[in-house]
Length: 236
Image (cartoon, rainbow, N blue to C red; front, side, top):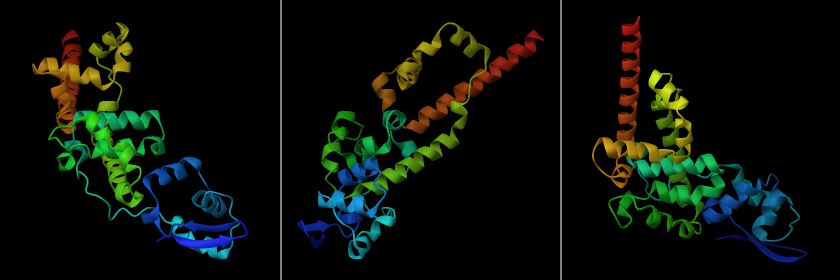
């Protein structure tokens, strides 16, 4: 239950822990960058608050991060979620700060977990939960997002070679021919490539586990480098 206070302007209430802070409030607080106790107390009260020792003590819990040892269930391995999910999360984080896309990342990450209506990832269906989850306690949603970000960092490190410059002759010729113009299509290029290679659809590739697609990409990268080395040796 919120703690009740009163000052010259009247009564007001403050949350007693992160469990009483909604996901929406957490994102707003992160975006506002409220550095002082007075600013935080005023945010929760909805009007300017004069902070005393009692109020400062009441909000001391904000000095600690949101706990990650609880919350709603989430996928343990991001690499086993779909190519569409991981690349959507990556794209969102590249375009905006976390507090602006927090709810979408949460719903995208959990999009297939517990079969939220379907065994495959349905982006529109999953994103439909975004507005709803903003009203859930941050202690329900934050653990999943924190784990998702940690998993994304793990995958980036494990497949770091995919993000290194491609110095093969084939890549150089492709860039010279204008392949850089395709960069705007991002993961669609990859999905289309493997759809053609495996005689399937782009939508089907988007449903493959991200790690499976990453391994295919890594194999193709290594094969191209080997072929480039063989060509250079033959020319010498």
